[in-house]
Amino acid sequence: MKSKPTNRRGFLKGGAALAGLAAGAVQSVKAQPPDTFLRPRGTSKEQIAYGERSKYVTSKREPAPGRASPDAFGLAFHIGTPLQDQIGSVTPSALHYVATHRGAFVPEIDPKEHRFMIHGMVDRPLVFTMDELMRFPSVSRFHFIECAGNRARTTHKTVQQTHGLTSNSEWTGVLLSTLLKECGVQSAGTWIVAEGAEEVKGNSSIPMTKALDDCMIAYGQNGEPLRPQQGFPLRLLAPGYEGIFQVKHLRRVKVVDRYYWTYNDYGHRRSEAREAALATVWGPKSVITFPSGGQKVAGPGIYEIRGLAWSGQGAVKTVEISMDGGKSWKAAQLKGPTYKMAHVAFGLQWNWDGKECELQSRCTDDQGSIQPSLPQVAKYWNLPAGKEIRVKGLDNPIHPWKIASDGSVTNGMA
Ligand SMILES: Nc1nc2c(c(=O)[nH]1)N[C@H]1C(S)=C(S)[C@@H](COP(=O)(O)O)O[C@H]1N2
Ligand SMILES: [Mo]
Image 1 (cartoon, rainbow, N blue to C red):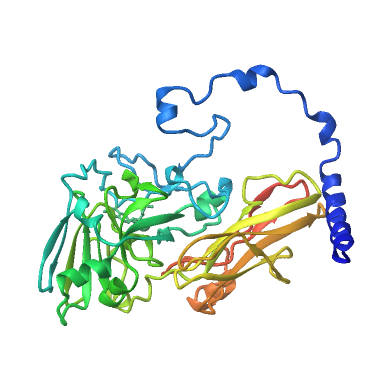
Image 2: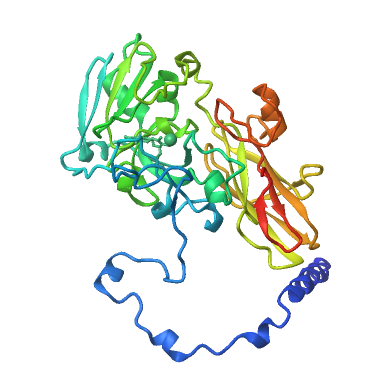
């Protein structure tokens, strides 16, 4: 009995703060005109068969800055997820970012015709149909993927521009280790090369240790088959590795005895670095999505600062938020379970006093790695600590957003 009044007092205290927030709201609610309820919604054949979002929800993907899509050849290139509109940890499939190699297109593949082959240094090369793949034990796992080109620039205005080339889905498929076991990997087979089915092949060299650890041959995304832009009917997932390893429209895995130089090794990348698998795994990263660039904070008062955090090395352990440009930090709440190599939403209550400030978030993963600040990144790469740091590896610095006294939010790097 004793705990009850205490709880109630605590609740009322919080309630009083929120009542201030909603002052006058009760009087302003208008009676809904009856036709709002009667207007036929969701009754067309199409809407009954496959739903659609409310017409009032208009969040959309956008070509990444400086990367026209469709490009000069009418092909899709890099398209960013509207992270500022995301609710929770999972990206809606329809808003998943899309990255294609220049010159690649999204092929229309009939799953009945599709074949997946494992060959090379194996005892029994095998070719699988989609139906055969579905007979193997499946796994369902939440994983983010992120393009190596996901790097914030001073010229970027919104979080969709600074961080939109990462998304998070529940992927379903067969572990590559299950299929490799069927084929019998020979002892000399220390690498795999994975290949997509388009004209310009998507392909990647991946160490056998990774292939046998957690690589997945995925056919499902968020409860339905993969979207064409995500690699229908089959894609490789190498959790935590940069996007280019996540080969879409997967048709072939060859077991080989060394690193192979492929189309995916952009000219400026050293193959030795790739072999050491150093430039391939995302470190801990996070970004605040509210308030973020282009948004406006309505005025002084209570808000929830929100964002997303992830790491290619493991699960997110903690996220901290700074409201004073990195001088002091407070622990944010993680909104839901944390999975290895997956986004998790975070939040922290914020009582904005209406003064100019700078918000930052910092992620620490379960391997003990901490997301670095921009000056730390500059120091590591021996670059002048300026506003624009162009690192050679994967970019994961703490991102600042500036809040002006009128509530407008701008990129703190600018
Ligand atoms: N077959 C194929 N696989 C591919 C690509 C491609 O163009 N073709 N693009 C790669 C790149 S650069 C990235 S970042 C990821 C993006 O995956 P998504 O489009 O599902 O977001 O897929 C990779 N796999
Ligand atoms: Mo990419």
